[in-house]
Length: 194
Image (cartoon, rainbow, N blue to C red):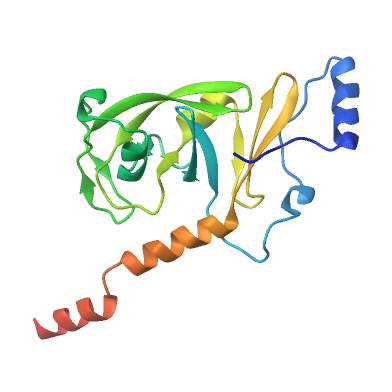
């Protein structure tokens, strides 16, 4: 997991604020864009410690209301069908298809010294991501995320901590999605023949 500490200058400012009784403020500035590949429109893809393992290719999607686990993570954590609880609702995939989940499981996500337990919905479908974390995780951690700044920020023990996105990994996932899409040309030619 890529967790960055604040610089000494930032730490001094945060320390002075704490002494005055004010808590650190979560936010983003242009300084937070330093180190990102410009220009970009990348998703926020991070590495998180889930159930004691460093899990790469985790999409942070604040537009979603559920955490999703895909087969790579399910198998990688050596989970079995008996580990899953029933989950009765259907989900809609990015492509607009209805997906029937295989079940639900509560797992810990560790960020620094903080541990938040979330309910993952196990979906047996292809994804270049191993998991998607969303609003329930962000809210439980008290975090904010920014695709523009490629970071998740949260407070821990009176300090602002960061999880930095991996743009290279995000781009690899995007390429994988593009190559797994059906060829639009062949679909168009089929429609013309009908």
